[in-house]
Image (tube, rainbow over all chains, first blue to last red):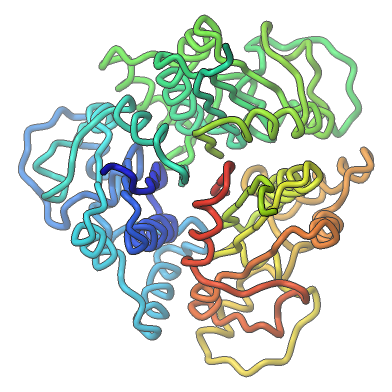
Length: 159
Length: 159
Length: 159
C-alpha cells in the first residue's frame, strides 16, 4: 500500500554547502524509508550538470549562461567564506579528513536509495540547459509535479 | 466547507530569482485550488514596493533604508551572477524570449487568482516602510497570523 | 497526552537577519504552545557560539575556521546590505528604536519558552566547534533526530 512518508526538497541554490545539506537530509529521510524527491530549479540545476563539457547546440546567451555557471557538483562554490575558491577547498579537505561523503558520493548514494532527482524543465529552458548536459537517471518535470508531491509530503523544504 | 489545501510561503529574500520562484510556486498552487498565502518579511517586502517614489514622512534612517533598498519588483537584483545588474537583464531577456511571465505579471496573476499577499507589519516598522509605498490590494499582519495559516497548511516554504 | 503541534526550523544560514527571522517565528510558535525545535547546522551554528573566546585544543584548520567565522549572535553579518558592518549596526539601531528584542534576547526568550535548540554534531565536527564553545542549555544531535521531529511537525522551515 501507498503509505510511505514523503519528503520533498526544492534545491534552488547552487552552492556546495547548501547542496550538501540538501543531500544529507534527503539521504537521511530515504534511510528512514521516506519517499524523497529533490526538485532542482534555477541555480540548483548546476548540481546535476555533468563534469565534462557536452557538445550541444546553443544560442549565444545560453552559451554564456553555460560558461558562467559551475559545471557540476565538483565545481560549486560556497554561500559563505568562498574566498575565491579557498573556502570550498577547506570544506572538502575537512570532509575528507572526517571521512564524510563528498557531494558526488552523496548524489550517488541518493540515486542508489531511490531518491527521485527531478530537474525543473522550465528553468532548464530559461538557462538553456539540455538533458544531455545533466546526469543520467534523473527525471524531468515542472512545478505542477513538484506541487503534487509536496501536497502529500510531511516535510517540504526550500533550500 | 473549509477543506481546501493550504500553502504558505515566507518570502524573506529580496532577490528577483527567489521572488520569481516564490510566485511560480504560489501561482501553481493557486491553479490547483490551494489557498495560498505569501508572507513578505525583511527584504522580501521590497517586492511589494510601488515602482514610483511615494511622498511619505520618514526619519533619516528610514529614508536611508528606503533609498538603499530596491523599489519594487522591477528593480530587484539576483542572488547569483548579479554582475552589477547585467545578470537581471540577462534573466529578463531569456524570460521574454521564452514568453515567461515577468515578476510584475506573476504578481498580478497571483492577485487575480486570490493568492493572499501579506506584508509583515513588524518589518515594515523596522525598515520604515509605509502602506502608501506598497502595492494596493495586499494585507497587513504579523507573525501570529502567518503561524495560524502555516499550522493549517500542507506546504510551508521559507524562501 | 502528546498532542501539541510541532514546528521545526533548520537554521543553516549564519546571518543576523535570517537568525532573527528564525527566532521570531520560533518564539511565536512557542507562544502558541507549539513544541518548537531549531536545528543549527553549518553557518547557523555560529549563532550559538559564546561571545568570549574559549580555550580548547584545535587543529590548524579548525582554528582557522574558528577565527574566520563570527563568534556568536552579536557578531553575525547581514545577508543583504552588509556594507562592511554598517548594515548590522543600522538594523540593531532601528530594532532598539522600536524596542524590538535583540538576537541574544530572542535566544534567551526561546530558551525560557522551552524551544529546543539543537546543534548539529556532524557540522560541529566538520567545522571543529566544540561543546565548550557553544551556549549552555542546548542539545546535540544529528540529522536523524531532526528528521524524527520534522516528520511529526506541521511547519518545517529551512532558513
